[in-house]
Length: 537
Image (cartoon, rainbow, N blue to C red; front, top):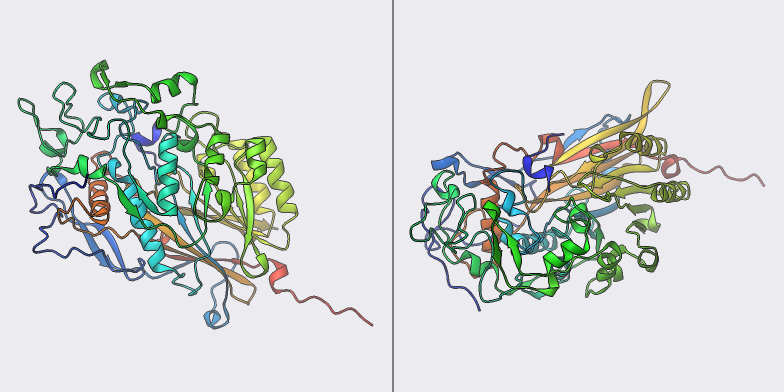
């Protein structure tokens, strides 16, 4: 699995003066359309990077939509006419790796940007705007495009916040619940971070959207990589805005960035003191003083779970239960679909340290007991990490073997890699493939292509199941018109910035054609299609 260097660690503002519009995918509001892209899934239209211009800068362009590529490999054959018989069992939306972050936090590690991997991205100040734009798209779509079934829920598969701070988690919950929020911390009158114009701490390794301070050189983003000046962006990103909120229940999964500092390091008292303090390390070994904020406090697992009960959305706790709170765990299950036929099992794959996946023996035993009680259910697992991201290969092998041995397990939905990928895990009998499950790994909101995925499960009534997956792009427009007062325009700008992040230009996070809009076939468990024998009188 390819890992980028980043993965290894891990009042209303006036319209700004936007310079260098030509060829940047930035549009003048008087001549370009200002509305969002068509309210549709990528079956209708999809987005891609256009041809490179100065500094390698690429606009975001619209391409023709993609139909469903049919994938076998688990012993089920494609047959004609099944669409007429097909019965929908469940449709839902998956969002992943939203990474809503406090970019001004003293605990962030941008100071290592010019000598080792760090977590800096030019678009990171707009993470909540992207999340809101995706919520709006999911609300607009409403139904699964393959079966027409109403979306039953949305699930976010981890890294919902960026470093497990209280304010980050609240922003995440408030975006999904809906209402007015302000993604700002510390001094609410100014931005205090690596992208500002303070000449004392100005560093060319970071993009400075307000331009270059007197006597300083242009930053690398503008001088080398073709980035524009977007004057007023830092102030605009910090203004209150109204989030739409999901018009359906939503569930949460814990990711490593939700439980660990920058997704890698355990929360310690020293880290917490740094997070709520005033000393922010910057490049060159220097430290700048920023405004302290107690809402930057780091949450342990129990506190993180407990905060999901402070919500206006449904369900209460967003999947987490009183038992989770009491036992300080983050795994649970719930049933949906006709007669609750689909059992959703949420796992906690966060390791004590590091960004890789893990599962302790207690959770593993719980999972096996639950699967044994779920023989007349279709089981879909959800976690943050895919199997390929597990540190311990023996544990990963054990999990895979247990899952492939159970016909009721049909899919595992996850994130973490920030890339669209789908893998087949077959079950074999006497050398013949007779079933298995699909692992569906979905890209992030923080990095290009900023997509989410719709998933639909259908009984084809011929001894097979189909799992349809459809990528969706958020409501942000392909071209930014310079309106810094519009959250949707800011989301579109974020997508454009992510497409041009110089650390990501060699990454292919959209995945292959067969990792996006697909129909995944597999045999249906016997309880769905075998008729029960009538008892003799």
